[in-house]
Amino acid sequence: MGGREANVVLLDENGIRSDGRKVNETRKVTIKAGVLKNANGSAYIEFGGNKILAGVFGPRDVHPKHMSNPDTGILRVRYHMEPFSVGERKKPAPSRREIEISKVIKEALEPAVMLEKFPRTAVDVFLEVLQADGGTRCAALDAASVALADAGIPMRDLVCACASGKAADTLILDVNNEEDQAGQADMPIGYMPNLGKITLLQLDGVLTADEYKKCIELGLEGCKQVYEIQKNALREKYFSSGDKD
Amino acid sequence: MKKFESKKRHVLPGDFITTAPLRLQGNVVLEGKRVIATSIGLSDVSADSVRVIPLTGVYLPKIDDLVIGTIQYIFGNSWFADINSCYQGMLLGQDVFGRGSYPTTSEMKERLDNGDIIYAKIANSDRQREPLISIADQSLGKIDSGELVKISPTKIPRLIGKHGSMIQSIEASTNATITVGQNGVIVVSCDETNGLLKALAAIRMVDEQAHLVNLTDKVKKMLESDGV
Image 1 (cartoon, rainbow over the protein chains, first blue to last red):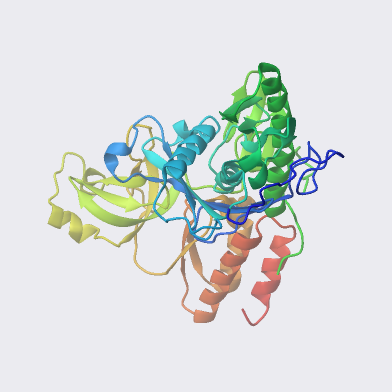
Image 2 (tube, helix red, strand yellow):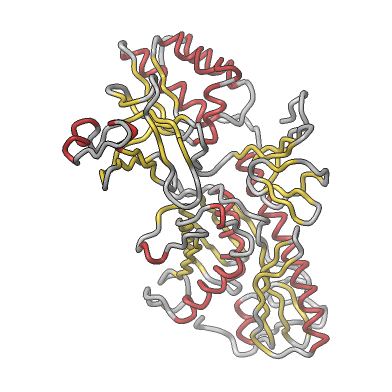
């Protein structure tokens, strides 16, 4: 976060962004499912410069007991940034931003996870950001969905997420750190493609009503691209019958 | 990995399976008119029902399943056992001491103490409370000896094999007695160390390679070789 140039060109005359992307292009995304031996389900995502690890435990007993629900399981999410994930050391204690993102991701996953099948239990999702570069909540949500599926938690659909936004008066897809700092709007979106429902929607900035509609459409395009990558990560782990030792 | 006799397909959560008005079995949900998979697995569409055979997930107790559990503690007139699930199995004192009995804690401890391993049947599993287990049948009860092994519960059908073929071939070639719980817990007992190690290796092999083809041949080859 330190050492930022004062005059970063967010969009040049050829429509190319500061990191060489076009306006409707996401950063490179790779996801690997089942990377942690001790968690019931896990996933590792690299979304541009973001590196995030997701671990899922459950369904399992809830302690303290008064938090359990007799009719349905509960979902608990902890989003946490490592002290070394950003340029200036982040204090390890949960900040207001981390508490907000934990809540928002939990609410984005709840419509997808079929918790009513496990009364009196909890599903715990742990998201550790190892390196942050703008759009961590979307990348974390992408990893959380894959980790939940890897754990065998029944889900109505995978939740995919991508942020769209506005910088240099143009709508762009997948806002990185520089564009977030110097841009005009950042809109993370979480989406369930098979059901056609949005489960996370936030806007940080100012958009007109028309821009807002177009921004959502742009964001959903990005979400669908990430959805394919999520599915391929799971297919690679479970359905590839390559020769193994 | 298609099988010829049925239309099994690889599915992920959210994948569409069919719009046919079939009875819903496990791991599927109806969204409007579409049947959607809820787990990673193989979709299985038959003449009257549709389900997904999951490839991952914890064990969920089902009535009449045979499971292997470890007694954790005694509370009231019941033992509570870890059955490798998100729920604990509750074994009523009355199941062991007879109906209408009120055994004391020390009487119960004498029969089954903390840490004892039991082979039990799921007697009842409703949403309101922990699943009830029973050891009333002849073949059920405390397991005195053997090695305890845990594998993923989704691999147990593969370990048993068609009509028990896989498990019987492992038992035959190693002279081991293998008690398999549907909850992924297995007890192997064998007089010879070599047989025991081979049986354990065969079980590990099924756990790791259940989704690959030619598993039966690979296991057979490993069992016939001298080393492990």
